[in-house]
Length: 248
Image (cartoon, rainbow, N blue to C red; front, side, top):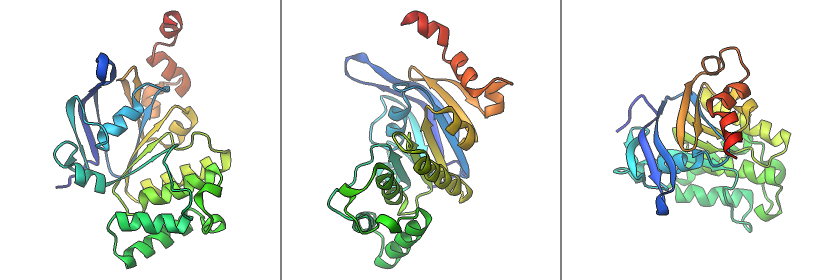
């Protein structure tokens, strides 16, 4: 089953052992052709939310659909419908870039013809030629991230999750990642983009949810959230910056 809404979250809550609440009552929707941002400091609940949506974590409460499939009842279809990239997506060090993509293409169940066509598409789009044949363990952080992007989107999924994908990257490689996200939006993908970098959120996100202490505290476009302020100032106001200083 598919619908016109790429991702919906309704009251997603995750409570870990000892009663630690990592995400609470998280609700939003994201449409095809849209970059929806989760903006928050480290530990705010962004990654936990993405892991619930991608079926890595089972929600304690709440529900969600991805590409029209329920994350609890249709987990396999959800996983087949997504690409997931973080700053720490792992690669096999001894495989070359090409071998990595061939391997994952087979894991995705792509036919040889489709797999090879998709590999060539990703190779050109992400400019992989320079380090294509080298073992991943010899690549720079930015080169590994480009291979990781190709690995994540090789099966052409309709929904993409990016969890702080530019962390630790130099400015040139970060630019490549952001350009890829813009191209994916133009291609009609539904994109959930997690970040704590204001400039990235302003550039990429059609709508933003500010998340703090596991809860969404504001949602809207950049103009709606800022009201004439900078996004940084609006964010600090939303998360109660002065109260946080007092609490510390």
